[in-house]
Amino acid sequence: MNPSPPSPSAGRAYLLLTVTALCWGCNAVFGRLAVGEVSPMVLVMLRWAGVMVLVVLIAGRNVRDDWAVLRGRLWFVGAMGAMGFTSFNAIFYVAAHSTTAVNMGIIQGSIPVFVLFGAFALYRTRVTVLQIAGVVLTLVGVVTVASGGDLKRLLALAFNHGDALMVGACALYAGYTLALRNRPAASALGLFAVMAAAAFITAIPFVATEIMLGQAQWPTPFGWAIIGMVILLPSFLAQLCFMQGVALIGPGRAGIFVNLVPVFASILAVVFLGEAFEIFHAASLALVLGGIWLSERGKGG
Image 1 (tube, helix red, strand yellow):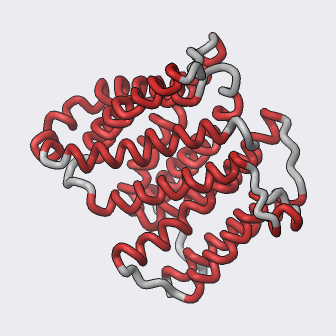
Image 2: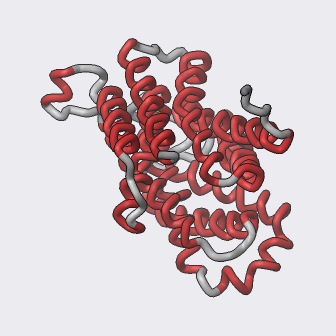
């Protein structure tokens, strides 16, 4: 018997979540384009300043309606914004100075691995044999791209500095993802608005440090264009599409679409940045996606 076709709501969710992954894949390209146009911490601060303004304009009522709930847990919500938005993005854009967009996209595929380990450590979430196999496969893929497919570099643990930073950034974002399990009972838009404000505020000390070190660079005209695209696509549009997609088909099924980010990032980097796509990149991508697929299959076992 043939499986029934997806419902119209499911089809809409698939489209929304694919757009989400495409926007997040664009962020790796934007990170590379920003090098020499705006310094990483200034980019992070201006990114969340713009997002904060847009979200408040659209979700002002949500914030007012949810304020009684959010006010009691401001420190927790602020920490989520600082970890998942400020810190992740700060490391992400610093890493862009010393690695490629292809590598950045593929290494982001390790986030579900960190989430799986964290969920087991914190909540004793059941882990199946297929999930363990998927974790191992994904880690092999990340190590392969981080070592540049060079066995000598692998044995000497001589990984690219930017790749190592990206692994750390992915661990931070996984922590943010796990924290969402204990989020306040507020609307998604209200919560996102407060987290964006927290991200902007916590980015200010990073910019101050950058200024004191003489490393701050305010945007060039092209830098402002990059910031505008970062605000609209990976920050704003992606978040709205993701929230709507989750509402339609649930977080479990929606999370699978994040696995498209490495695919889109790799394609966009080759097309728009002219980056080389080597055999080891293809092998790494196959390992990462294959590992995540095994993990997802394991959830149903």
